Length: 148
Image 1 (cartoon, helix red, strand yellow):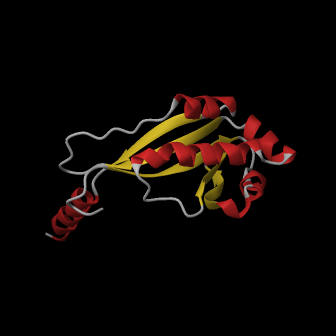
Image 2 (tube, rainbow, N blue to C red):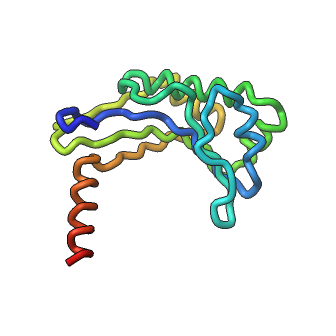
């Protein structure tokens, strides 16, 4: 993030958690998504996806991205939709990167978007990431401390 930029919406990840492998479900989304991970995590399984070509959107585009992901879920073939329905959690995770000097940041989702997510038994999650500049400074301090 540009150090002069304010807090900003990054993207929406679709995160699914289950007791069974989700690879077939992730593959069923096709080329419209990027599979960030699909596989085992400890004793459980998860799939983490995002829309191809999304990212760097404005906060106003969060609705559009969430609704596109919901439409993809609604169009899943029967075997993949069964995996979706059996999952323990289905999360539309809105990523936000905080800025060191932002006064306020608001991201609104329309009631229809919230209803669409609920109709596919999903939930909205918001993840706020620390400012990159602060993270880099902390890593640099940690390295200096480790070498002295």
